[in-house]
Length: 229
Image 1 (cartoon, rainbow, N blue to C red):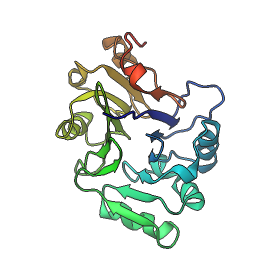
Image 2: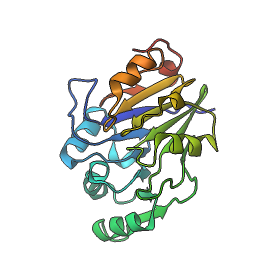
Image 3: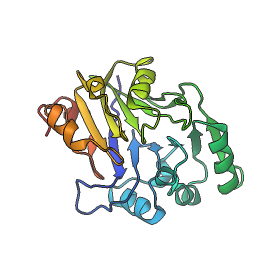
Image 4: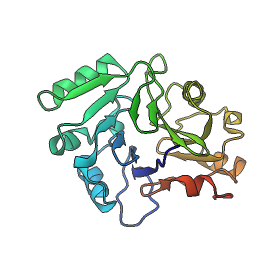
């Protein structure tokens, strides 16, 4: 059992008025894992500071995929904490991080599920044309999958997550995913960023739906509360 919490740092929307919004996504998991880095360094760093998250406490940065709205703040993070390990789903993205990052930046390719923190494991690399990874966060009530854009299909990432854990929730970008029956039975459904069917998801799953945005915190208390509209 762990006491993991997920804090959304960067998103198109916000649930706290003192945070910036921007096209992209980023979340801190468990205090030492940063998942994606949004699309803009100044806004990402300012949101981290406002949320009281210290960059020197980060051990790992996990990038879901290589699109700029998920990697745009990486340079600023590495400037302030060059000792983090960057975990990516493909060799191609690893090469890009090594080329643009500080000399000696540590990059790990997680083609298979990889533990990146206490109670936090990647899904491994999923998909064909756009390869992507999510992270699976273990809570007492089950696991929550965090996605970047879910380009390979949210169902494919859920299947990968379920290979390791019993998934009770999902948060992140769902892109244009339409097979919404795959979300049935989940306790937490929190679409954000690039999701095109937010209103339909909210209407179809009113007891599980949680509005996402910068400042949202997913913890044991939230997972145990219903309804959460």
